[in-house]
Image 1 (spheres, rainbow, N blue to C red):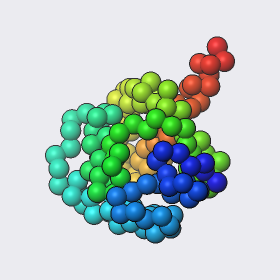
Image 2 (cartoon, rainbow, N blue to C red):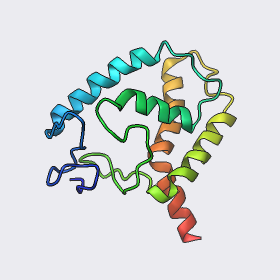
Image 3 (cartoon, one colour):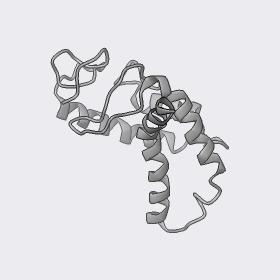
Image 4 (spheres, one colour):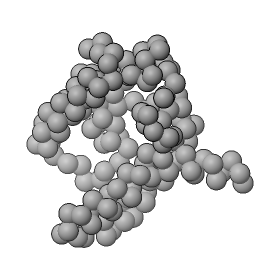
Length: 146
């Protein structure tokens, strides 16, 4: 169970504070999925920037979740993880460096979109997404041990 913090309701086991005051985790997940689906449709008609970077990622997050979370699009500043899993997200002190590193790798990866195979593209993007979610945590662990 995730510990409560400033982003969650007290004694909720990690249910994120939200503009709709939904305190049930399953119902919040449903609302997030509904909003994300609707906003992804709206975002799909936007002109995609030439370079996918941290600012654009923040824009996407804000657009998708601003109606639900007052902090949508902002960098979190507390330690947290993924729901009822053992996955720990990057520590706040290392998010900026981790994102800079990840987006640099993404910019240098000229082969990422060079496939017509949806499964291969998904795998390649998942590698970057996995690093985005947890890689900066590993980066910070390496740097602390040096």
